[in-house]
Every structure is written in structure tokens, then in C-alpha cells.
Amino acid sequence: MLGNLKPQAPDKILALMGEFRADPRQGKIDLGVGVYKDATGHTPIMRAVHAAEQRMLETETTKTYAGLSGEPEFQKAMGELILGDGLKSETTATLATVGGTGALRQALELARMANPDLRVFVSDPTWPNHVSIMNFMGLPVQTYRYFDAETRGVDFEGMKADLAAAKKGDMVLLHGCCHNPTGANLTLDQWAEIASILEKTGALPLIDLAYQGFGDGLEEDAAGTRLIASRIPEVLIAASCSKNFGIYRERTGCLLALCADAATRELAQGAMAFLNRQTYSFPPFHGAKIVSTVLTTPELRADWMAELEAVRSGMLRLREQLAGELRDLSGSDRFGFVAEHRGMFSRLGATPEQVKRIKEEFGIYMVGDSRINIAGLNDNTIPILARAIIEVGV
Ligand code: PMP
Image (cartoon, rainbow, N blue to C red; front, side):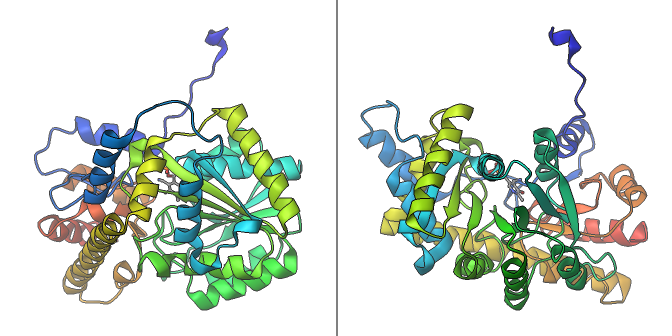
């Protein structure tokens, strides 16, 4: 029977990782996969995460099953991290999931349970796995304009025009901050305009918050999400702890369903628990416990915030350095967008041919759509990348 399976196209980003590993060149540079790396190319365990694990090792006495929807401390701590004072516990359903991806998948399943004709609006471009999951689920996908290839900023007029076509019963997927793959983000004023469109259309927003703390700061990066939450009666939020806690392999995330009233919250919480039970039963515990320990222990929380801030400001410094180098080499400001973008990624706007040349001639690996991982750079590699970009004529 299994012989009937069709070969699957490998995930392009994961395939690029393999290609990089196989490249024997000494000075090769990996700007591919979306993992934070320090200046030495290492993805460290954050200090507070390590300390939380130490405490867990000393205090945990059992590995029996825990909550099907996650532990209450984790649910509360995540709700507060994301929504701040705006968290309304009586009307918020929360589900611990297998990473941010699990939260996205459960959000789509939940919305489809509520509306079998669900259609999802996604930005063009978006994280490729968004579309891949929706295609696999057989959900109709509609793209909305997002990236302005000329300015490398947001095509906000296009975005608004396309989102105005959404209807009640549709879902609109928005990146909460640090848009992947472009790095181009909405201003708070623009978020307010999006809220107005959602109010008018009645479409359900699903906010993918995978990089809180990687852009302008923990609070700032949640501001758009909080604004939507304050104005729209039903909102889904899929959050990942992979990046901001650096616990990628622990597979930690959560889905929040903000509901109009307590009775709907009850329904949503029940449906979400059911979805976990049908998919993988209990969600992973270890990473969620790390997160709740860090967030609820004042000294660990302070240290985590300080380390996250260092990661964030380090990436900003790399952005400014790269933009400066490109300004000097090109004699123009046309690469200023690199410093304007936020998060781990920037889409450079290079053609596939130019991306290929940069890989072959300079040993620099980026995703085919010219997305670079800023965290893959350091003081030594920035001039090499800048020279490559100019030399291939981006
Ligand atoms: N959304 C976006 C936009 C992402 O970039 C990622 C991670 N690459 C995720 C969700 C999922 O992250 P996780 O590893 O927690 O599943």
C-alpha cells in the first residue's frame, strides 16, 4: 500500500540547509533557515531557560500526563505576555500546542469546525508553510497584496483593497510582527486601518505571532495584536515560543481564541481540547514548563528579558551595518529598507538568478526568494554579503 505514496517535494528551506552542509567551501555563509545565531554562528540556550530547566530537574517528581489544553500557569503567562492588560480571562480560550506550527494548524482546524466553507486570506508572500498546510487541509487560499517590490515596504493600498473583499466566515491571516519572509511590517496606524476593515467585513483574524521580542521590543511587537484584540470580538492568535525563548526543538506554542462572551469561550475551549486529543492527545510539557517558570519567576524573567533585548538590539545593529555598507558600495540609499525592516528576515528583492550567483560565486546561502536571515551575519561577513549583492547587480 505504501508504494502508492507520491514523492513529496522537499521543504525548500530545509533542502537549502542540506545543500549548505554539503558545501565544502571554508568561508560559506548560511543566511537560510530561520534560527537565531550569535556572532559565532551558535544558537545558544538562553540563560534563564537553562536555569528554569535546572530548577525543574531538581523539583519535578513525576512525568505523568498533565493538562490536555496545557497547564494553567502556562496559559495565563502566555496570555499576559501577548495581550498584557488587555487579557480577558473570562472570554479567552487557550490551548498549549506543538510549537507555533501546531497552534496554526489547530487554529485552522478550529475555524473549519465552525465554518466548513472556511476560506483563508494570506499575505503575498507569506511563510511558505502557511500555504502548504492550508493546501494539505484542502482549504481555499486567497492571497492579498503585501510586499511592494519597488520600495521593499508594505503595499498598504493593495493590502487594504484586497482585504476589503473578505467576507464574514473568511479568515485573514496576519503576521503579528517581524513579517516572514519580507521583514516589512505595518505601523500601528496601519493596524488600526486593518481593524476597521475587519470590523466592516466581519472576517476572522488569525494572528501569527512567532517573533515577539525580535522586532521593536516585547510590548511593541504585540501592539498590533493588542489593537486588533481590543476592537474585534473574535480573534485567534497562534504564538510560538521557539524564537523568543530559543527553545525550537522543545516545540512550544499556544493558540488563544478571544471570544465575544463566556459561553462562546466554553465552546471554543472544549473544541480546542478535542482537537489536541484527536491530533496528538497531550501537548508537549517540558518547553511550556520552561516558559511558565521563566515568566513567573521574577529574576528569571528579568534575565530572559535582558538576554532577549540583547539579541534584538544585536540584530538591529547588524541591519544598520549592512545598510551602511550597501550605502557606501552603491553610493545610494536604495538599500535603506534593510535598516527599516524588523525581525530576523529581510527580502532583498534579488532575482532567483542573482540568488543563485550569490550562492555559487560567493558561497552565501539565502532562500530562493532572496530572504536573508540577518542573524546569520556578523562583522566579518557583512562586507562579503554587501559586495556580493552589489556585484550581481541587485
Ligand atoms: N510562523 C512563522 C511566520 C514562522 O516563521 C514560524 C517558524 N519558522 C512559525 C510560525 C512556527 O514556529 P514553530 O517552530 O514554533 O512551529
